[in-house]
Length: 383
Ligand code: ATP
Ligand code: MG
Ligand code: MG
Image 1: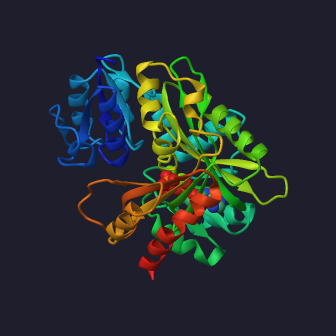
Image 2: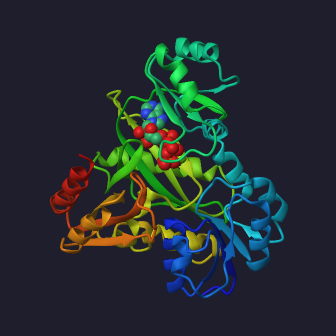
């Protein structure tokens, strides 16, 4: 389909699902990550690079082996990406990764593009005084966030009152910080947007994400909100993604506010396939992984490819976290319309994403009915 080799920075579950999609199109992939990482386990076609996506030397080595580099993670040294740009094609652009990987720069960029975000202030000094000033301006609670290297809420602290400030500074010590005004949301929404090389955007349906302990637990596709809200969320996500550079899939997270007007704020975006888009594998004509590959290699992608398979198709994705994920996975195999994905990770630590399942049905109520026993099993595991 395309004779160029694609280098993937990071070999976790997102890389693994990219490799699955690449195999079907006979697109060659080379992965940079530790030996036996989830993506490498299913691709024995080529010698991969052993090392870390955080290492400049390893990224240079990968660049020699491939024609296009893409990412399954945004926490990469962008100085080396800038250096190898031209020697190899980077999709999306290193500029996009640089802005997005610093959540404060990302928020400022998105706001300048005319998309509403929670008001944010950079914390110049990690001292109680500077946080007290922010508390006086924003009120409590406010959210303290690490600007960099954040994922699954590791990097966030809810400052519920002024007494919590020392604890917040201790929890996020030695990290560059910024503060965000609290977003009183009723639901969290997400949209996967595909940006093609000419800067055009097409988007998947708006989904609803449910987080527990800051980790995505469930995704409902489509979101159980009025059509008008879904359409506004897609338009907002496309507008934000259009303001970046380069091709690929972007995951856009949003808050639906409890202000009586269904206002939306953009929470954050990721320059890569995203947990909230796993459902596209079973529920849409073309998955987010294949769409990403098509976008970065300039292969055709029809707007209809990102629709749910039929107008009534509904899907629910459940992340399989922590040690007892295999019990839920086995039960899912006996559940109509359920598909299980296990990632091949060895150590099942609590909260670690070990796999996921997607239940597809002809209506949302049917999908909810089918997934309920699986969610109950996941909940029982925590008690
Ligand atoms: P991810 O794994 O999605 O990359 P992350 O570590 O980057 O997560 P965020 O998306 O910034 O973290 O925040 C995690 C969760 O915390 C959000 O999904 C939301 O539930 C809550 N949250 C974040 N910012 C705010 C805010 N300003 N007000 C209220 N809740 C918030
Ligand atoms: Mg994030
Ligand atoms: Mg997030």
